[in-house]
Length: 474
Image 1 (cartoon, rainbow, N blue to C red):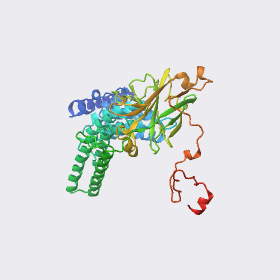
Image 2: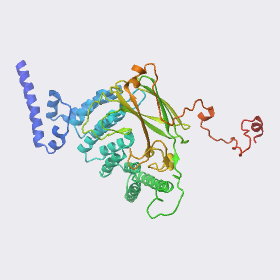
Image 3: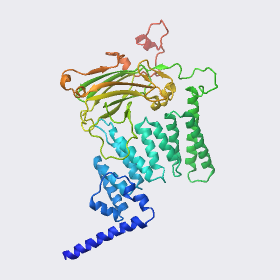
Image 4: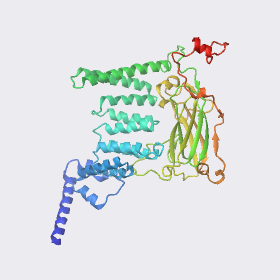
């Protein structure tokens, strides 16, 4: 009985292998789309997994594994999902949704206890998107997702966002509304004329769609109206911010909104209040809310590091684990009432912030291209309306005026060891002035109301707190 069972299993295994061989050699497109040598798989398969792959059950096994991954998502077991994503995309490289979900998972889901993303994963997210786009050139989706990753999550390397979004719009299946993001990417990349020209091209396509009978007529009208509004807004902003006036041959002298340049007055003080815990205080002269200043703490010799960022596109293949011996923390200082005060606690995430190196760089960085429109209305897209006597920098981002400075920290300072056990590490920019205890009025955003008193005339006594003025309404 055992002999017959063994013979049966052997025959079944040979049949599976024969089916795989036939599929490999005879089925058109198998070598091109599914052969392992074309998929750049870096992780090995066990013999039983390889047998299933060769036997023609690749797509079925991939589907079963992805269902299992969904359960891990529900449980929050994110580490277990990574190898499944990698195996599914190898078994079935046409699984566009798995590639897209994998990119989002790798780029967004790994965070510390204070919801800061582990940016050591981002090069793998980019590499996965590039691989998916290569294996699925017939759809726009993975080129678009890769461009979105650069535009939104990385939020600094806009030239790569443009590259991938340009690839996406060339594919016929792209959703019309998703074409618009390329225009925004052109603006953030400083290609303003190209952005405006592109919007007019998209408007022509939207008008053509209105002529053709369609079940989505309302959607086509909405798309056309949206693009028209984007063109109107951009033309107005280019005029007010001095872009149109700066064209060659225009000798007219106009006081644009970017003139005179505004001194942002950045300064910062950093205190290592506890091991792996920084308190950062800073000043910023801009009154309107909306400024976010990037803060990066990283190894001084981090591979591929550039000012307040990394070479996110520098990884050729997907890796399941980030470099465990490197530290890269990124956060933001939110400015309110021209001041910032933030405590960054990394003590609860030693795996994400291992602090193995001896030396670290703490960086402060502000780029107007990532700013909201009401801030850009003064600073413009590339910082033409912004200045700072201490930290204005035109080199770390060629063609842009940004705010940048850095400080050096040692491992002993960050961990409060050695000479720093009883001594508090304190670093600050040369222009930092401790403001001390401020009046409570400085901590409240004053919003005029219907009963607000008018501002007193010059030289007149201030009676805004007078009981008589409150009673008489004067």
